[in-house]
Amino acid sequence: MLRNGEMRAKTRTTLILSTLISVMPLTLQAADGTHCTYQLDAPQAKVAWTAYKTTEKVGVTAGFNSVQIKAGKAAKTLPAALKGASAKIDGLSVESNNEVRNGNLKQAFFGLLKNKADIQAAILSAQGDDKQGTAVMNLTLNGKTRKVPMAYTVTDAGLEATGTIDVLDYNGSKALKALNELCYELHKGKDGVSKTWSDVALKVTAPLLKTCN
Image (cartoon, rainbow, N blue to C red; front, top):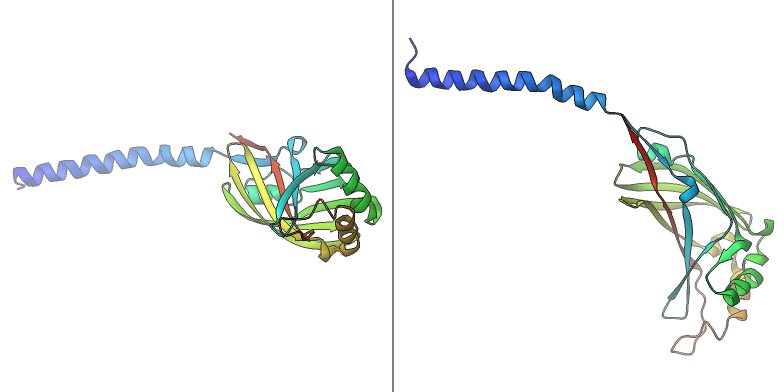
């Protein structure tokens, strides 16, 4: 025969087990019943780049007025949704919010590139989650295609992906030299040395379309 203390302990255990058993099916049903898909909001996506001048490496940020972005297929994970996204950019549509600079970039850089400065990009693969991750992008510039590692983060504003390229990897030495010569005085730093860097930072931003049911 159980004592009072043992009886109370058994009663508490029975109540706890009963509560767990009653809650578990509801929890599983909620988790199993929620399905989300992700996709880039392509029409709202933006492409920006930052080049550098002077030995102090002062950044100059610009974008393009003609950018056609195609989202990948909606998918159950963000990395899967990123795969297949692509972009086609008219390099001659460069926009730096400065008409003189725009003219210099068109004349001495983008205007010297092959295929009328046509730029194409496509995401080959991605891994991570809905907060952060990495991707590999194929970038075609001046007739050359190279793989570019990208890193992405997600905030309330959407997705931001960043990476870096070297224009020398795209046979861009001639165009880079021409730009530095045209902007020789403008690219002088405090040390009096004129320099145009070959590395360029890339940034792509886009709202995310997340649908759950």
